[in-house]
Length: 222
Image (cartoon, rainbow, N blue to C red; front, side, top):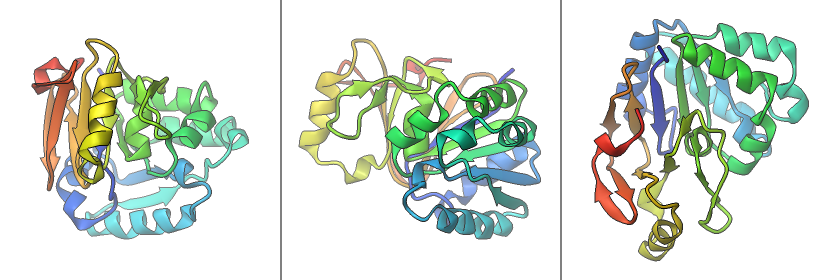
């Protein structure tokens, strides 16, 4: 049985995210959160880690960063072991394309899959949420490309509250037929329980679209 999963619309490691972060901690029985700032490799990744440390301290657990910021880091055996042993792994935001290129077919990614399949919780925010699905929205133009596919046949759009109607319309037009596309507002989470059922949490809104039409959470892959 896989562990819990959270796809967060961005704005992670802040008080409005506490409700679903606390739920992930409780469900995974984690005492430490392992944070990968991979997507923010060129955007001061230590700042994200520092925010995570403060945020999770307020929730009663520790957090530490794992500096997987380039391809060699993702192939490092010690880093892979740290991910495999973790009870809660958090992929922070930044560049989805960089995050995908670093983790794709790597030892760290294999370790994350192993941990999740063993019951560990996985969370991805912003870019982290985008890459966990497959297909993935290409942030360069709104077309669809390959994601890492922890969840297949589903695409996530974080920060949807910041999108223009025109950009959203274009993405829904380009979406592969029959594939659910989930729009997720900032500091809001789409949650997958261990039994494969989906729910929402946070301060914003989440909507599911299939072929451009609104659909329910029951259209998401279990």
